[in-house]
Image (cartoon, rainbow, N blue to C red; front, side, top):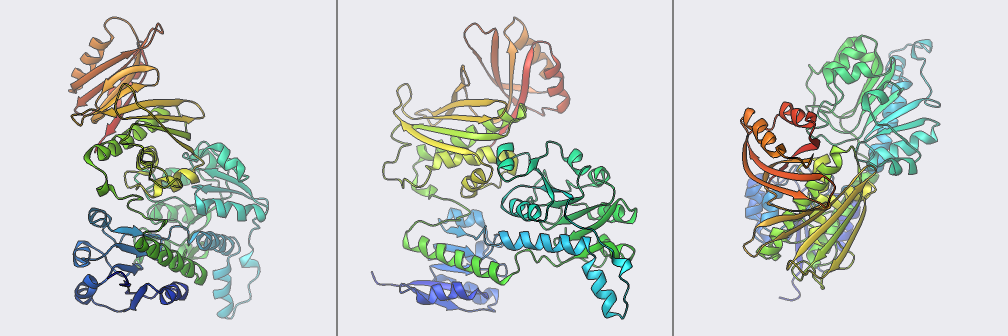
Length: 546
């Protein structure tokens, strides 16, 4: 029926602003049913077009299978750990979150902990209510004039920095994936080396996600690099700081204090090292309150509901965490180009990484009818451009970087993104990308053959042809006799087999570029041996899965 209303289930407590939007929508029938058991939820999900959850409702495969009519799963919050993203994407269900709703709340929680820590607020309060009046014992420190290091210059870290400047603090930022220009525009000094920056900072605060790179990044070694008598604050995620090492640093007097809103295990158990009585006078702990404000909960409810209804109505919406486009609507060739574009992004990021460059510019040229959809919205990037960004950012943020968050991360990192279109001559369809940083650039051209095989056909100035699959060894060398044979022998010594090999040369430069698809482990020792060879300009490895 044309006048059928969208049915929306709200199984958890939701901010009143979000509920009001649902109540006032003429095309929506909303049911608020809190306290449902899992069997009860599975029993009714089949009647609904959308569900708006918080963290207490698990939308796993069983729930998604039960939601036969589901088009949207909206999470009134940032994390979507309670949603099976893969299964939702496979079913074409849009998964939406509210990633910016807690930015100010988390920034203010950081400032609250910082002030409480340096002025001993919790300890002074406890002392007073127990009948003491010991002002000297709680002599604190001022923030004015102190140097703060912010690890992670995303939305929250930037907001913390702005507030710290208002307190008269000198702000340093450490984030290898943010260009220096982006940091300086905010009035921050960008640090090039984490250990060096830690040695200069009076206060250190962390605002990065947990990845393989950031897990326990503040470990015993980094804690020993910190300035004597400094303060450490973690309002980001548990697991970034080695809690036991932090407790030792406090006990030994290397740290003057530490404040944590997040823990490696939540809720933390009684044996958590930070709960030790002998360091209680130097520690401030809160139970993950970063997003727990009335305003933040109101904003995330409003954001989740507004975007969920837009998605149901076929209107433009934001913050889909799985896909900004419906991949199942692409044909096999277009899907192939989507995968190729992502690999080209990974390859470009790795090429800049070897030169110590941070990506600041990304240009994408799409050529051919399969790639240029004239009916696509003009205010949204094409899927292939988004896929290039996903690949670029995966190198820094890990493979969980999804298509929707990639443009947001690019904007936060100050990456200028340009998209253009043209005709293709030699090949029917073609993707050309140019990615630049402060020290170097990479230009890559790729296509897919009629047989469906992916090919990189140009790399910088080199005409070359290789299939971007599996594990690659790439190197630039002086174009002399015997180099390739020598490389083959070195790989053989390390039990690495060459599966495919291609070579490109350009003009009379005297240089050549080689790409080898290899089997076996490319150890750091092997790569180091190649880099030391007198015939080599550079060598690098790239894994291109998918």
